[in-house]
Image (tube, rainbow, N blue to C red; front, top):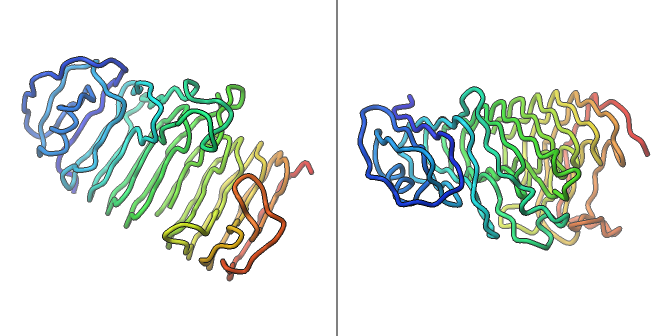
Amino acid sequence: MFSSTVLLSGLVASVLAAPALEPRAGSCTFTDASPDAATAIKNKAGALLMPPVLTVLSLDLTKLNDGTHVIFQGKTTFGYAEWEGPLISFTGNNLLIEGAAGHSIDCEGKRWWDGKGSNGGKKKPKFFSAHSLKNSNIKNLNVLNTPVQAFSINSVTNLGVYGVHMDNSLGDSLGGTQHRCFRRWLLYRPVVKNQDDCLAINSGTNITFTGGNCSGGHGLSIGSVGGRSDNTVKTVRILNSSISNSDNGVRIKTVSGATGSVSDVKYDTITLSNIAKYGIVIEQDYENGSPTGTPTAGVPITDVTINKVTGTVKS
């Protein structure tokens, strides 16, 4: 049962003095991201009302009360800084995080894009951290132009992600790269336009991705697996999705020389269109940027089903 409401309305990039906080019962309209406002939202139950037009560089909502309902409305933007991010972060229990009709969260990533992604150049903030969420849902967010990786989902239990629309297609012509979208859960009907993995599952169990529409990136990936603190991927279902105008279709990639395991993975009913390189890739020789050409057996891949993966590949 969601018990309190936070409205995130029209965040813009200016830094002014924080206003006095005025309590209200039952809901909180959060119309700025000043440090005092963010602290108040994390530590108070229920009611806050803020005037518009104040922000800082990020939105830290990692200590919300159980049952909080967070609503993004209007246009949310961020100031510029070269740092690791994330721009938005959540932890908590029984949260509902959603976007109102007509809203957008525009990271204006072109300010960071230099064609090097996370491999060099400017330090680029990751967009959205959903870590240690329990019994929560993320719904109907409209995200534009993340500086680098978009959603990082880690150490969650019973998390549903529904109807997220992420459009980084502006980066096709402005040097945007390395937009990995969802990491480590139920992901239902996401729409992703990017330049790297649409889905990259590095570790985790009992993950379902269904009804996705991916365009412009590197496909739906398990991995890379290996070289992290947790290197087990188990019971993953990637279903009823489409991949177009991308380098690859479906792929499983494990790191050369690393240890871990990939098991009980099913790709089913995946439609490919205009794939540049490979429709299906399974490799055990991965290093960032390219395969090594020397597969290793430290991350065994077992019990994989690939069914009804159909479509067109250029090469």
